[in-house]
Length: 127
Image 1 (spheres, rainbow, N blue to C red):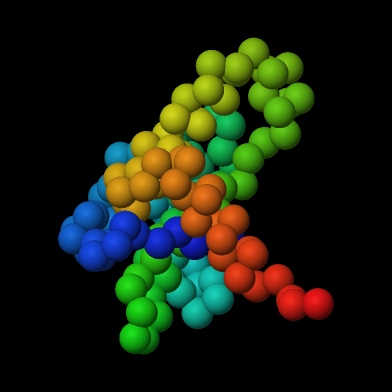
Image 2: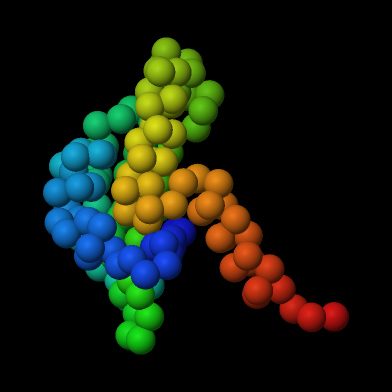
């Protein structure tokens, strides 16, 4: 499960007022919710794209902090996707993930990577 921050001064509710509808437009029908680390996340049990097995996505709400978007993409193994002749679906899956996260956070892939890298560096112990 990964959590992504919004751009400075922005909030998830402002960027995506109806999160469930947005998730459905990118990945397929939401089949329910599931609690993960204290957050209720939407479940897409049968995603439209053949690469995904299952998707969890939703708002990670913290008191005193801005909400984050929490996502977990369960994917089929690359060998299985290629053997099934669905290489185009793999390319589309990457685009769907990046477009969804860009809409939700206002940050492109490079900016999200740098942010995650800084978070890991902040958690590193001092020797």
